Image (cartoon, rainbow, N blue to C red; front, side, top):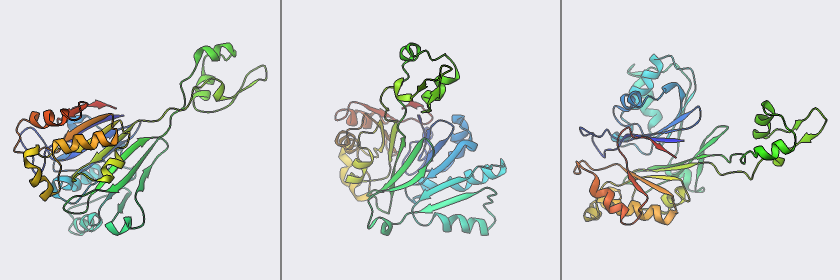
Length: 307
């Protein structure tokens, strides 16, 4: 898996930062978290194929997180997209897209599945599975912003154990397609009639990679849960600690609070993003976070991180 920040600015774009959007790239598919203005241009610059995009996950309905959605959807229609696309987010997205369609501003000629989750939906449940494929899942929980907002966690499913080539040779398994069958969990039968089970040549199953995305939010328990033992926590760091009261008022977090969330959740790495335009250079935010959580990286537009 790879993480590609497509926009790292809070509220409005700057000359060096676009507004919020992050791509997480898996095997044969990728997912977009938030879709601020001009995200489709950043997607092109990142060399990502829109045809492999399977889901767009919106945190909340502030413009810097979804104003780029109609343009991206329209471009995929122009490009004759055929694959179904899933959109997940708070209530209002469907009405917004329907209105643009009635005004003939937006035209979509492919299957679009929109799923809206309201605060009431979480009255009797803590978490919701919103996407699943053969290899990946995405779950969501509410966060703590000025308006209703969602955080997400994408996780690779358990992977087979490592293939023991020496053991396979001892068992007389010929190199070739039979190795692949065993690695994919299939039993095989050798020419001498012996049946070989995958567990005879595979180590214990391995946990997949995981990424959590929490923007915009005050520090909250659900962010900690979404980030529990995650490989990479992508978390907002809108302000430095001297603006902690402003952060609380507007439903955001400081870099120090992002770092404390990473530490409390036992995340392996923290990627801070969503920087206020008052910081032309975000190094003060990085320094503040690293003083608490050393494994912190400062997001930059179009950088690539291997998970």
